[in-house]
Image (cartoon, rainbow, N blue to C red; front, side, top):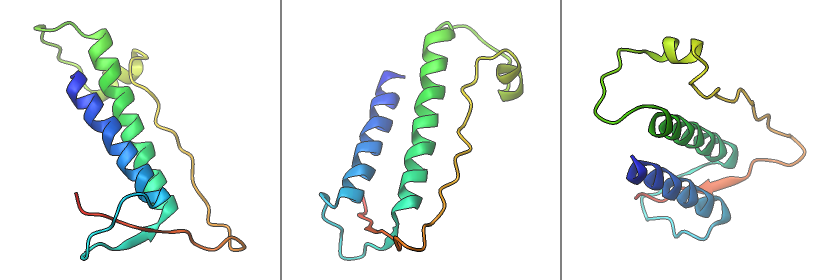
Length: 101
């Protein structure tokens, strides 16, 4: 589980590097708005929170018959942020050249 969490953290750093343009895009790369990449980072951070919750609260080798609804009702599921990024027409779109990994 720790390897999965570290892999997700590395993915976040890669996306931040794409925004900062410190990663060289490939020839067949494409461009997307930076807000889209930031939303992807938020999704990955939520995945890390979920994996961390599972790692910290569930016992290894035990079987649990719980779904997301059960975990949410028990207060064990991290809440996903509902932040909506709005484009500011005065700032324009910040484009990010995507790199294929």
